[in-house]
Image (tube, rainbow, N blue to C red; front, side, top):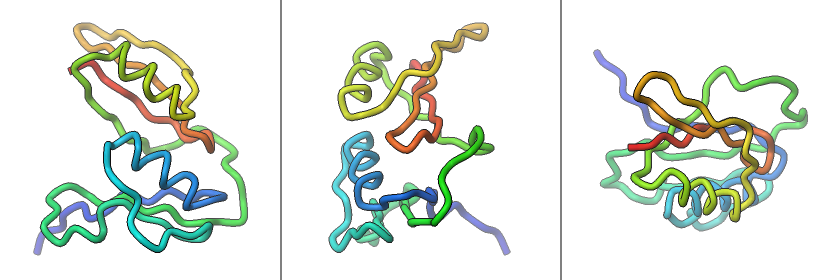
Length: 118
């Protein structure tokens, strides 16, 4: 038996708000029925090959660096970083390692994610 990745789940204070941010980041739509307690992106698409994104309200806030974070890839790193900042992300760091280059951002609830030059 093997497993496959079904979804990425974010604990958050407001699932609908954070879900809408990530839907815009991904160029997708927030699934119908989003609430402050639960929201999703991609769960309504039965033919989806990529993981769904879930957002679940929890009582506690984020207190430390993520141990797991999404990495996105784009052809135009500067333009995409500016687009994401316009959506509500915050720039944390610009990084270059060898031939790899990325920007670490924070989503509106402080979760880290990277956008890599593709």
